[in-house]
Image (cartoon, rainbow, N blue to C red; front, side, top):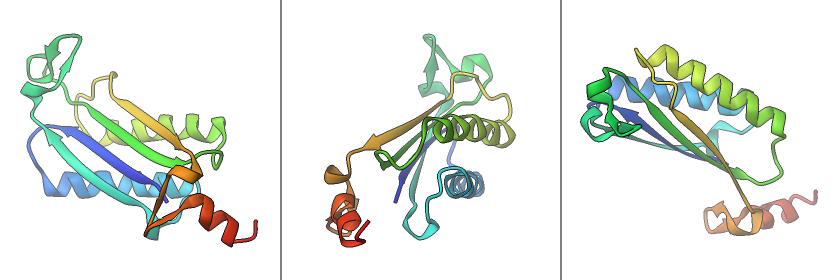
Amino acid sequence: MPHTVIHLSGQPDAALAKRAVDAVAELTQSVLGKQLPVIATTVQFIPAESWFIGGVSLAELGRNAFHLDISVTDETNTKAEKARYLREVHAAFARLLPNLHEVSYVHVIDARAAAYGYGGLTQEYRHQQAGV
């Protein structure tokens, strides 16, 4: 039941947003084993003039960048899965964004099951109800 937030450099572009969401959803399913119906994603565009790396704007650098935060329930993915996810997400965005700056981050946020959920229920509650 991950929630993802994607920040992309540049001006709003609905087609790019959709491609980014699709790429992240596919990798979230195939690498992290999450189910599509509970993957929620928001996309925000940040003007290149307002995104700085090392104190220099992406506009000045002539580069693009992204930042992805994904919240997953703690202890549901291994270190190896998360490392693979970071690699594959970065590669996917390198295909989507020309001149991608290496300093583009992916943050897998391991949220405690008792402090995270949707529909008014924690993931801990869902786990207990499943009898696992």
